[in-house]
Image (cartoon, rainbow, N blue to C red; front, side):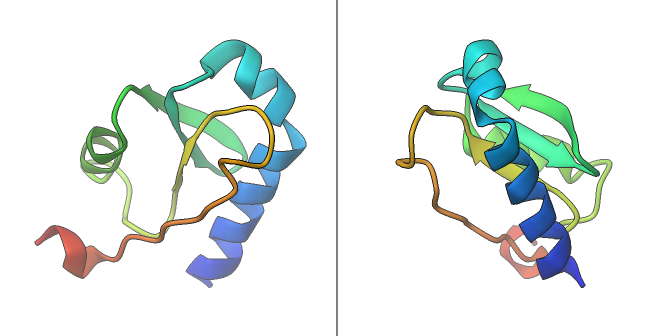
Length: 82
């Protein structure tokens, strides 16, 4: 289930990439339920801060850049942050 949720969050990013670049270029955004719920300068801070309020696997952290260079996906499991 989490994988399909993350795929839909990534699709949301792809569908809105141009506007995301205008607002957040170079930042790491956190997407959950089709909304940007956080903006950070560092990927690891984005994950650690967001997991305080949201279960790992229920949100996507994505670096905002133009083009396809940011089309990589990293999935974090709960075990990675114990």
